Image (cartoon, rainbow, N blue to C red; front, side, top):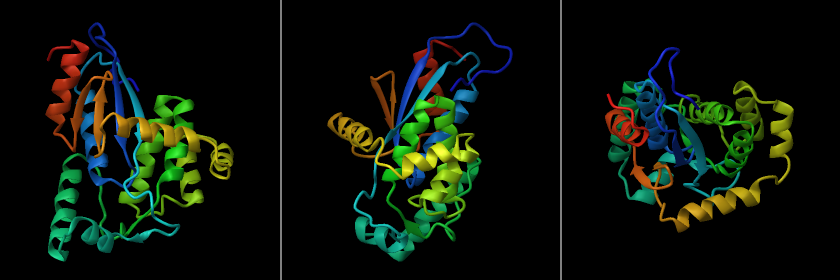
Length: 227
């Protein structure tokens, strides 16, 4: 991905960003929106954005599980705390131009096949992978779609400009399964146990749904592009 306008000063140093996340993580959607907004503020920025896999609920069976019940059990939340959390997420997303619809997002799903498809999309180019990632986040958080369903995933791929037949072929096989598991293990071994985790140039880490300004400061420092 290149976050550059038509006219700009001399480009700075390229910045590699590994965005470790899951497509059912609301703070990952918020973090990505903030990162992209920050990138658009910086003329001449060369951003190399790569999405890395992390599964919040790898044990979920097909069909998923009621989201509220799962989160209340997993985090010890009350119904009131769950509602307040949803409202905070919805409001933060709205500030960044992303729509969370808690009335549609009622279940949590297994995302392993989504990560396999994102790995394949990454081989088609970082722009294709970004489009697919954003499409999957919208499908889940805005539309309430089942992101473990192969047709939902294939549709998201074609909406991202990728071949629906090629996407279906990936999903109907076990392609990239070993690669995704290896990537997940590599990031766990690097100490990543929460998402979003945003790693800059393989050295610098920011975690959580950081403000746009925090991402902007990091990108400016690493690229050498001053305000």
